[in-house]
Image (tube, rainbow, N blue to C red; front, side, top):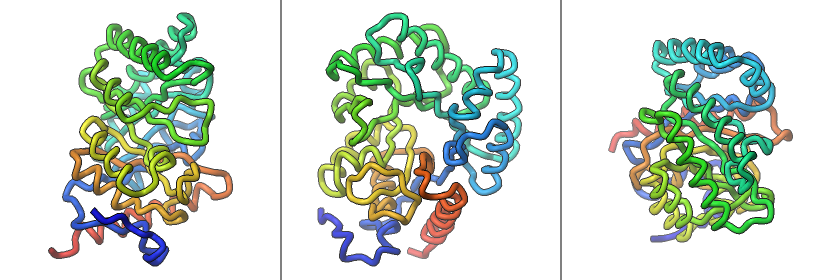
Length: 307
C-alpha cells in the first residue's frame, strides 16, 4: 500500500483525501459540548448542537461538571430522562464523556481509596448515560504517576470489572480512551495493551485520532494500528494536527488525511460516530463549529457522488 505524501496534495484537499472508495459506513460527524467549554446549562448545550449535528456528545467537564455533581441521583436521572426524550424525538445519537480532570477519576490508581472514588464517579456517569439513552460512555484511564504500564493496566482492569459488578452495563458501550504523546502525566498503552483491556473486561476502546496520530505518523504503522483496533473500537474523537505534534486543531487546520483515517476505521469494522472534541484557546468555539459543519457538508456531498 502506498503512503500518502501530503506535501504533494493541495492543503485544502488533504483533509478529504481517501485511498480508494469511500466506505458506505463512513462515520457520522458529531460534536462535543467540550468545544463549547461545557456550559453550565447542560440540556441547552445539547439542544443547541443538535441544530447542526445528528450526533452530540456531552462531556462532564468544566461548568457542566460542577452542575452535574451538585445534582443528587434523582435530579441527574430526571435530566437524563429529559435528554433521552429530546434526542429520541430528534433522532440524535447521544454519547457521554465521563469526567477525567482530577485524582477523583484515577481508575489506574493502586491506592484502594482513590480507586474506589474513581469507580464511584464512573458508576454515576454510567447510570446517567444509561438513563439518557447514550450509546456509549467514554472514560480516561487516570494518571501515570511513577508506575509502569503493567501495574497501571492491572489496576485499571480491576477497577472496570468492579464497576461492572455493581452496575448493569448491558445496552451501552463502556469505552476506554487511548492517550497520546507529549502528555507525560497520562499512561500511553500499546495496541496490544488496549486489546488485553478489551479481552479481560469485555469493554471497548474510544480512539482519539489525534492521540493515535501523535504516536504513529500517517503511514503503515498507523494503518496497522487501525486494522487491529477498529474491531474493538466503539467510539471516535477527531481533530486535526500537524505531523505528530499533539494539538487538537480545528478540522482543516493541520495536515492529517483525516478522511482516509476514518475510512480505514470503517473498513476495519468500526460502526459509530466521529466526535469533534477538545480544543485549543487560539481558536474560537465558533471557528471549530464552522470547520466541523463545513467538513460535514463536504462529506455528505462525497457520499452522494455517483460511482
